[in-house]
Length: 542
Image (tube, rainbow, N blue to C red):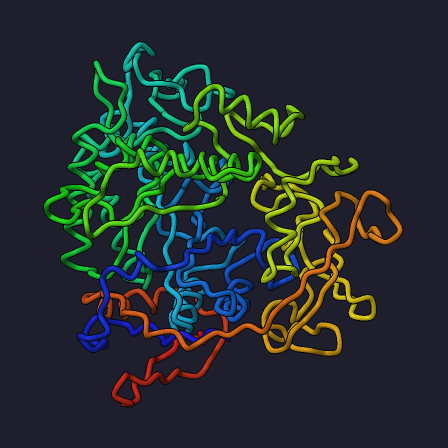
């Protein structure tokens, strides 16, 4: 089992030799969809307590940093990216006390935590928007972009071409149109208003003071709009990001900002900031064109699609890093490919139109209830991965699955595993809730061996859409031998500390306000020098 040193509470707790402000350059980030990861109370919805209970498993996987998509209060019309309150947890997931417990537990295991922060827009149910539409002359009247007609910013492209006909929507309450770059229920904030900037900075500080290690900044190219432009990558947007970075570097060193800018690398590179200064905006940025080309390379069995785009990628400041990723919560977007490459990907990976979403691919596996196709290219990466045989997906793509609000009979973890050691087979049961003790090195395998300790031979069924189908009885499903060599996992070096110089005092002010839900003992941790430091639990919290 991989063991990380705990992440100390402050920069000062870490010896100078162990401080590493560029920890993100070597970190393994893991996006955790809280809703579908682990349910702790049996309501069929994943929550923060469930996630906390499985941190040992995530540590065992080798995760350095956990990335949580939005878990704020939201009507969930866009998976939480329609934020109704920047400082409140969605009740289905828990409360602020649960989040603090999760972050502390992750840090004790040497894992950092970053969260999604939607800077560009809010939900139309946010209190700011409700006040803005009711009282144009009030304090929130110009928190959003309003106009008497829908003719403004004609050069701004429509991002969701499959659902939106315009970037403007009429509001009958105010009698004006409001601007939105995404869905019509997500009005864009007006960053020309200094009060909007201050409110966003206050929300960022709120979460940093509660103990997180950074943010994925959503949709940063669209913060400002200007007539005569395409309203993307404007100098004013970069100026605000520089202001955020200065705040981070001054008050919260060792914190990372990850830019989500779905643009070509020559445009995204500007979000790192000044090259000569080593970067003064975001520390990281996603490299979107690489992701679809990984799948293209797998299908063509050629490295050329990936090597070609990397060769065209511009240099970045020394203090920054590209975020290279295989998949995330979005569809497999095909925006950063040519028209010919998009047609090729659709033809190879999404012949069925139902597999397509906007200009991307919604899922990668066979649709439920259908026989698998003879071409198993989509199954190869998962079926051949020796370390993750207990997470093969039989029925559907976990990340591509659409989580709809108020959908009945939600399941906390659709890819739960039912071990059958007598047949040396792990059979996935999509309709079974996650069994206790499933994750982590304690999973029982043939001969009651512990995972990661002995050489284990497993037989895993090739991916199949049917439930509980015996691969030996079905001609369309072929068993595959997966030989696992012993895992040699040396102790990792100490992770650097997070920096929140002001967090101690503010944290003590915030904690008494958090809801008490259970009593617990105070906790004791030890500094590198061995000195015991008592950390009082939350009131009624452990």
